[in-house]
Length: 227
Length: 119
Image 1 (tube, one colour):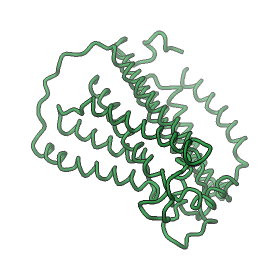
Image 2: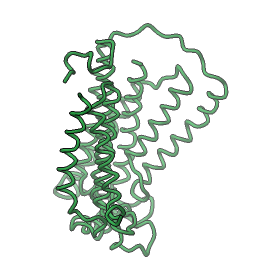
Image 3: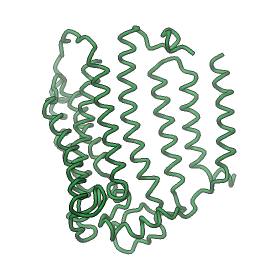
Image 4: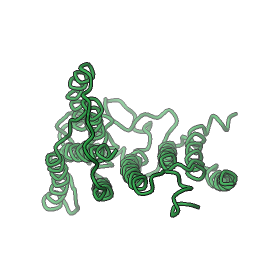
């Protein structure tokens, strides 16, 4: 019964979407906004990666909201899981030598790769969120490979708060020094396609990378603790 | 055939959306419903990226001189999808924590057996 209702509902929704969408052509030139960003983005922000300049410069305030949503979700997860009564400690049998050595060998390399991704966010595909996700994957490796090891709760929350604080402080300094709006690019733009370019964008992306990495690692830590 | 090859990205994206919707509507297991939400979200993201695509376009990154700005795909949908993916991860984590809570309380993840979740 449920299946039939589901399929009928699906067909109705499908019909509506096809009717409304089949006129949108595929692969045509972009909108005016996108054209403006591609033409002017290099001079106005100094970043070679236009997506990064949209995310952190033109729509930087939006990104602050996005970081806040991620933070709220992490807080909500802790709040939902905190009131559960704690289980007695399970006995953890140590993992084998090969697994432990491999995970010790890979952990710093994955951290390095994540740092590379978020430091080069304004030059290559990638950025703070992606780099943070890679760093969190290094912590998953530790949780799965070296069983019994945990990240320190205080250090992860300190990193997280510092990342968010740096973002807001840079935005406020931009408001005071650079221009008339929040997160204006007040540092020198530098030469296009070099590491030290694009003003505040690399600094904010490093802050976001640390924040997202520690936040996702904390989320994983909470979920692992309960399972 | 021409229609299919011209709109293959839209068809793929909405295929994922419908698979996700079907799972949400039909499945009884809460974990499967959460997986369905995740698949639906992937479909929507793919659709947004496909809207910004230009035939034979390159990524909007000026990584070397001599790249033609006219040939680059629209950066705005990509920036929006970057936001959407992060929000998706947040929603997924919160949904999984609620599922853990439900399992601890009712001892089952079957939506037919949880009174408040039945439809």
